[in-house]
Image (cartoon, rainbow, N blue to C red):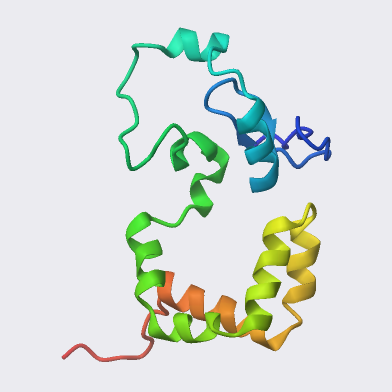
Length: 150
Protein backbone atom coordinates (compact mmCIF):
# COMPACT_ATOMS: atom_id res chain seq x y z
CA UNK A 1 0.00 0.00 0.00
CA UNK A 2 1.51 3.32 -1.00
CA UNK A 3 1.41 6.35 1.29
CA UNK A 4 -0.93 9.22 0.37
CA UNK A 5 0.67 12.22 -1.31
CA UNK A 6 0.11 15.92 -0.67
CA UNK A 7 -3.36 17.44 -0.99
CA UNK A 8 -3.73 19.46 -4.20
CA UNK A 9 -6.04 21.92 -2.42
CA UNK A 10 -4.52 22.67 1.00
CA UNK A 11 -1.04 21.18 0.51
CA UNK A 12 -1.17 18.92 3.59
CA UNK A 13 1.61 16.37 3.20
CA UNK A 14 0.71 12.69 3.24
CA UNK A 15 -2.98 13.45 3.66
CA UNK A 16 -4.47 13.13 0.15
CA UNK A 17 -6.37 9.85 0.47
CA UNK A 18 -9.09 10.67 -2.08
CA UNK A 19 -9.07 11.36 -5.82
CA UNK A 20 -11.31 13.42 -8.06
CA UNK A 21 -13.22 11.11 -10.43
CA UNK A 22 -13.10 13.79 -13.12
CA UNK A 23 -9.43 14.76 -13.24
CA UNK A 24 -7.64 12.46 -10.77
CA UNK A 25 -6.45 15.32 -8.55
CA UNK A 26 -5.75 14.23 -4.96
CA UNK A 27 -7.36 15.85 -1.92
CA UNK A 28 -7.57 15.14 1.81
CA UNK A 29 -10.97 16.12 3.16
CA UNK A 30 -14.58 17.09 2.50
CA UNK A 31 -13.78 20.83 2.56
CA UNK A 32 -10.93 20.30 0.07
CA UNK A 33 -13.21 18.13 -2.07
CA UNK A 34 -15.81 20.91 -2.16
CA UNK A 35 -13.18 23.51 -3.06
CA UNK A 36 -11.80 21.29 -5.79
CA UNK A 37 -15.24 20.44 -7.15
CA UNK A 38 -15.96 24.16 -7.64
CA UNK A 39 -12.76 24.59 -9.65
CA UNK A 40 -12.50 21.24 -11.41
CA UNK A 41 -12.72 21.51 -15.18
CA UNK A 42 -15.63 19.30 -16.28
CA UNK A 43 -13.96 18.79 -19.63
CA UNK A 44 -10.68 17.37 -18.30
CA UNK A 45 -8.62 14.87 -20.35
CA UNK A 46 -9.49 12.03 -17.96
CA UNK A 47 -13.20 12.74 -18.30
CA UNK A 48 -12.95 12.97 -22.10
CA UNK A 49 -11.09 9.66 -22.19
CA UNK A 50 -13.77 8.04 -20.05
CA UNK A 51 -16.67 9.48 -22.04
CA UNK A 52 -18.91 6.77 -23.32
CA UNK A 53 -17.18 4.03 -21.33
CA UNK A 54 -19.12 2.25 -18.61
CA UNK A 55 -22.46 3.13 -17.08
CA UNK A 56 -23.08 6.71 -16.08
CA UNK A 57 -23.91 7.30 -12.43
CA UNK A 58 -27.60 7.26 -11.61
CA UNK A 59 -29.41 10.27 -10.19
CA UNK A 60 -29.04 8.99 -6.64
CA UNK A 61 -25.24 8.96 -6.94
CA UNK A 62 -24.62 12.08 -9.00
CA UNK A 63 -21.17 12.54 -10.48
CA UNK A 64 -19.43 11.69 -7.15
CA UNK A 65 -20.00 8.18 -5.83
CA UNK A 66 -18.35 6.43 -2.91
CA UNK A 67 -16.52 4.16 -5.36
CA UNK A 68 -14.95 7.23 -7.00
CA UNK A 69 -13.73 8.69 -3.72
CA UNK A 70 -12.44 5.55 -1.98
CA UNK A 71 -9.32 3.92 -3.35
CA UNK A 72 -8.63 0.19 -3.28
CA UNK A 73 -6.50 0.62 -0.14
CA UNK A 74 -9.55 2.06 1.67
CA UNK A 75 -11.75 -0.92 0.76
CA UNK A 76 -10.87 -2.90 3.91
CA UNK A 77 -12.16 -0.04 6.09
CA UNK A 78 -15.36 0.43 4.13
CA UNK A 79 -18.68 -0.25 5.87
CA UNK A 80 -21.37 -1.69 3.57
CA UNK A 81 -24.28 0.64 2.79
CA UNK A 82 -26.76 -1.78 4.40
CA UNK A 83 -24.98 -1.43 7.73
CA UNK A 84 -24.67 2.36 7.38
CA UNK A 85 -28.45 2.54 6.92
CA UNK A 86 -28.81 0.84 10.31
CA UNK A 87 -27.21 3.93 11.89
CA UNK A 88 -30.12 6.05 10.65
CA UNK A 89 -32.61 3.61 12.17
CA UNK A 90 -31.06 3.55 15.64
CA UNK A 91 -33.07 5.26 18.38
CA UNK A 92 -30.09 5.08 20.74
CA UNK A 93 -27.90 6.92 18.25
CA UNK A 94 -30.63 9.48 17.59
CA UNK A 95 -30.84 10.14 21.30
CA UNK A 96 -27.08 10.72 21.54
CA UNK A 97 -27.15 13.09 18.57
CA UNK A 98 -29.64 15.32 20.39
CA UNK A 99 -26.74 16.41 22.61
CA UNK A 100 -25.45 19.80 21.33
CA UNK A 101 -21.95 19.13 22.72
CA UNK A 102 -21.64 15.91 20.70
CA UNK A 103 -22.90 17.65 17.57
CA UNK A 104 -20.25 20.35 18.05
CA UNK A 105 -17.52 17.72 18.46
CA UNK A 106 -18.62 16.05 15.21
CA UNK A 107 -18.65 19.36 13.34
CA UNK A 108 -15.18 20.16 14.65
CA UNK A 109 -13.86 16.83 13.35
CA UNK A 110 -15.55 17.33 9.98
CA UNK A 111 -13.93 20.74 9.52
CA UNK A 112 -10.47 19.83 10.88
CA UNK A 113 -7.34 19.42 8.78
CA UNK A 114 -5.68 16.94 11.18
CA UNK A 115 -8.55 14.60 12.01
CA UNK A 116 -6.49 11.75 13.40
CA UNK A 117 -4.96 13.73 16.29
CA UNK A 118 -8.31 15.36 16.98
CA UNK A 119 -9.99 11.94 17.08
CA UNK A 120 -7.35 10.73 19.58
CA UNK A 121 -8.10 13.77 21.74
CA UNK A 122 -11.88 13.33 21.49
CA UNK A 123 -11.59 9.65 22.41
CA UNK A 124 -10.76 10.96 25.91
CA UNK A 125 -14.25 12.54 26.08
CA UNK A 126 -16.77 10.08 27.60
CA UNK A 127 -19.61 11.41 25.42
CA UNK A 128 -17.63 10.89 22.22
CA UNK A 129 -16.55 7.40 23.33
CA UNK A 130 -20.21 6.56 24.01
CA UNK A 131 -21.10 7.79 20.50
CA UNK A 132 -18.28 5.80 18.85
CA UNK A 133 -19.16 2.65 20.80
CA UNK A 134 -22.82 3.01 19.83
CA UNK A 135 -21.91 3.33 16.13
CA UNK A 136 -19.62 0.31 16.30
CA UNK A 137 -22.25 -1.82 18.05
CA UNK A 138 -24.66 -1.01 15.23
CA UNK A 139 -22.36 -1.70 12.27
CA UNK A 140 -20.39 -4.52 13.91
CA UNK A 141 -22.57 -6.19 16.54
CA UNK A 142 -20.49 -8.17 19.04
CA UNK A 143 -20.53 -11.91 18.48
CA UNK A 144 -22.18 -13.81 21.26
CA UNK A 145 -19.64 -15.83 23.17
CA UNK A 146 -20.30 -19.02 25.11
CA UNK A 147 -23.87 -19.30 23.90
CA UNK A 148 -25.23 -22.76 23.31
CA UNK A 149 -27.28 -23.22 20.14
CA UNK A 150 -30.99 -23.67 20.75
